[in-house]
Length: 70
Image (cartoon, rainbow, N blue to C red; front, side):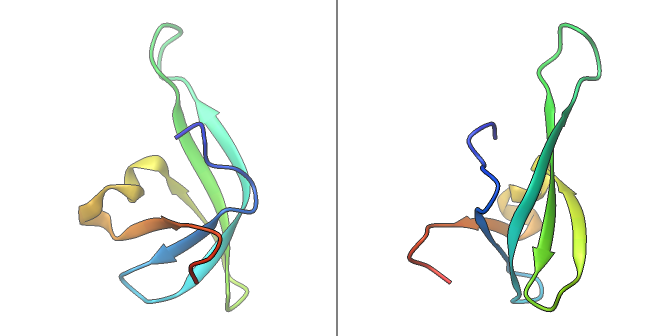
């Protein structure tokens, strides 16, 4: 998920709301492990939340939108 940039649009299928990635961070569980990415998202209603990259798996309901979708 390194390719997710600040400003990317996100859709939460669980609630139907959309948001924008405000910031990204990565964590390392071990020096030789792959990083885990986290995203700070501002939703259209003004709320802000942090989600981990695992939220973008199909069963969790978050999706990155293309620029022309929203």
